[in-house]
Structure formats: C-alpha cells, structure tokens
Length: 456
Ligand SMILES: Cc1ncc(COP(=O)(O)O)c(C=O)c1O
Image 1 (cartoon, protein in one colour):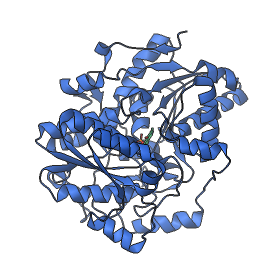
Image 2: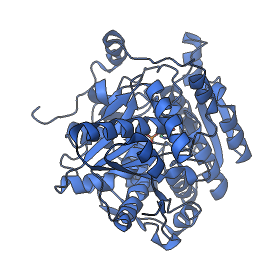
Image 3: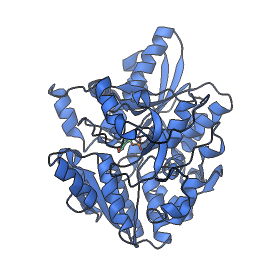
C-alpha cells in the first residue's frame, strides 16, 4: 500500500456536486424580516447574481469554469494519505486515510471556494470584496484569491485571533489585502459593540456584520463568506469527489467519515459526495466534529436565526447558539461560530450525520501524537477531527470490528504554534458551556420562525 495516492491535473473534478438535488428533506428557504422567503433580488446588494444563482440552484452538477480549474491546479488534486504511523501508534483495527488540504497556498481547504468566489465577482464586474475571518485561514485564502483575479480585499479579523495570530495578517498584507481587528471603529456595527463592551474579544458574527455593512454601502463592493452558505459547501465538494477516486484506487471504501465543523464547509466538502451514497443505502457513519466550547450541532436548537450579530443577514434554518453568542477564546478560531451551514444542519436533523464534540486539550493531545507520527502539524481546527479519529479507532477496538476511517486534514498549523506552546506548558483550560449559559445565549432567537422538522 503506497503512503499517498496522487491524481494528475486532468483528474481535477470538472463539476461541483450539489447535494440539494438529493436531500430527503429539501432545504427550507432563508426568510426576510417579515418572515417571508427572500428572493435573489434581496441578496443582490450583498452577493453577485452569478453566486446567488448557485446559492439557490438545485441542479445536481455545476460546471467549474476553466479559470477556476487553472487556479485549482496549483494545489489540486490534493493528495490522499494513508496514516500508517498514526495507525501503528493507536494499535486499533482501523485503516486511516486523510485528504491533505494543507497543501494549498494559504494552507487549508479555504481557497477551494475563495478562488471561485473571487472569480465570479470579477466576471460580474465587482472591484472589491469584504469579508470576516476567525483564525485568519479564510482571510488569507481570500486575499490570495483576490490578488490572482485583481480585486481589492478588506478583511475584518476577530480581535482575539488578530492578537493571537500576528502572522496571518502579515500573509494577507503580502497578498495586498487590508486586515483590521473586529470590532472596529470603521463601521456602525463595530462601533455599537465597542460602545457596549470596549474589551470584547470579538466574534465571527460581529466581523460578518462589519463586512456586510461595508459591502452594502458601496455598489462596487460585495461581501464574501468563507463557510455556511450553500455555494461555499458546493465549491468544497471537489475534496470528496477527488477522495472517492483516490479511495477507489486504494481499493477501499470508508465506514466512517470525519471532518471538523466551524460553519461546516471542509466537512461538507469531503462528506457530501458520500452522503449521497448514504442516501442511496450505503452504511457509513458521517461525523462532523465541533468544540465543546461552541456546541452548535450537539447542543443548540435547530431554529431560524441570523448569520451575524447585527441582524443584517436573512434568517437561516440552522443549528444556532444565537447570533449574539460570544464564544470562549479557545484556540480553534475557525470553529467559534454561533451557527452551522443550513445544509449540514438539515442533514443532521434528518439523521444522516452523527455530530460529536471534544475539549481542546484532547484535541491538542491527538494533534501532538499526529505530529510525532505523521509529521504534519495540524491547525487547531483540524485537531478536532483527529480527536474524533482517535475515539472512533478506540471504539472499533472495543467492538472488535475492523474499520476504514477517512477524514479531512483541513489545514496545517504552522502559524498556530502559540496554542501548541500553551498546551505543552500546561497553560490551556477546557471550557464547557453550562445549561444556564446556553439558555441565556439562545434567548435572542425567541420569536424567530421555526423550521419544520419531521413530525412537526
Ligand atoms: C484549518 C481549518 N479547518 C476548519 C475550519 C472550519 O471552517 P469550516 O467548517 O467552514 O470548514 C477552519 C476555519 O477557519 C480552518 O481554518
């Protein structure tokens, strides 16, 4: 068995897979303030129409334009590895495969959609993109993509990460983007939050409000989101489509699929092409993994909620901790989002996914074992997937079953070493939200419309 399976440039998928064509329960529509479904025109000040069409499409396959394929060929197809040394260290009856998305220029899966979004905005005539970023992976991916297609780029970076991760903002500067800490004084949304709490660590929901506000104020600017939305999940499916070809070459099929989930996109990218198989009768455990400090799918209600703090986005049907949620400052900045992609949420509600949550110290412990066996240093977000791989391997041993596990190694952690340093020095703490805190945060959704669930 080779250590890695690599495909040629001409094996990059030519189409994205749209799970909306196959879902047992169709996605429920986003709603406006009046509670009525919104249409494409309502989104036009925020996104270009070509992306809005993708957002709403139910076509199963969507062609990937040539300039996007050209850019993808810089790092795609990404290699599929067999984690042989990690398997030996675990000593469990499992084969472990992983897709290495850390090989992209920005170091994670995020450029799979950043390149596509920059391209569609460019052909629509847009000059400038605004966005939010947590850990900085998304901001740097969009900065790189805007440089490639000749767009200006403005990034609002959650303040705690801006301070914890100085090198990500420098990467964005190298690619020509302007990155500021959020909340900032540049927008009304930012000024409102700072007036209430000048020392706030910030949150993705606040940074999103700031980026949308600047986009709607300028006809040449649009907003770009790094996760959560349907078109983002769509663009990421190149990961799973490639993995399917590579697993076939390896002569294996996964029993378990795992990906960490912040807004849901790297998980969806790997999992959705396999969810299609599950819908058609295959037996697979498909596991999105989140932090116990931000337990969106494992503990929060499935409700209509806003995607941002200042309530500028439509209401979306999703698992949500409430749009006012300020997460604890755990190191996985990209997993500290209050909501979850509506597509992932609906599939979880329908029982096709089995979400799990882990404490950050368990994740770092797994990521250290990973680094000492496989060599690669994982992003703190990715370490959540590795913790779940360890748990599933141990479960297989207890059950006396042989299993094949496939997971998404969503990014490297070479710019996230401060978290590792704290873990090694024993300075990290685990945070678990109490029921009272959960009830308090979710109060802001009281009175929101409720999406339909089976039997009600
Ligand atoms: C390396 C990495 N993995 C995972 C995530 C989580 O995002 P998503 O759920 O959209 O994949 C992020 C977000 O910043 C990330 O940087």
